Length: 174
Image (cartoon, rainbow, N blue to C red; front, side, top):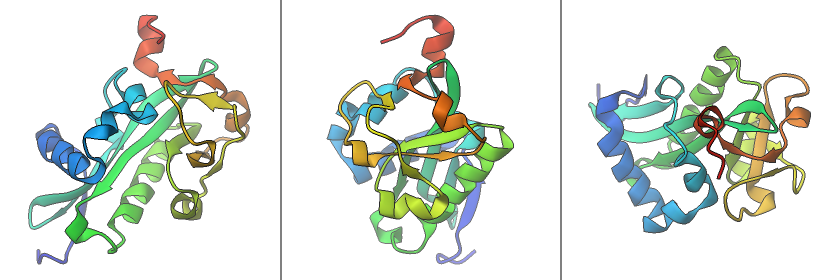
């Protein structure tokens, strides 16, 4: 495989350190204070629904998904999505999003939610949620709270405080 060839692979446990490095590079130390990161602290991401992009055996990007719930209804939180700076503008992030949404469909997830830029994510079917529809454990710009419905009516049923699904199962609601 040449350096320009990209393989898209399911995330493996051995990828964790490099993914954390890529996320630190992309989002800096302030990432831990963001609402989506605080939500992810409630439990692990679903490795079966998370992917890496690799070139020559080196991971150059990743996307993760975590099971969340709001109003007692399940969904997926997409993110973080990050690509090393030297590999940006090659369509890697877009391809990772495609893989993630397709995996969500196969897992029968009713919807996928994320915090991100609407112009970037709208080609994948993501639209802005109505203000106040869901809340996260911290402030979020309402214009950046997006979702794609994978099951008819899922967005209507998904409302209220969004928590990591592990918190729901354990009874811990923050």
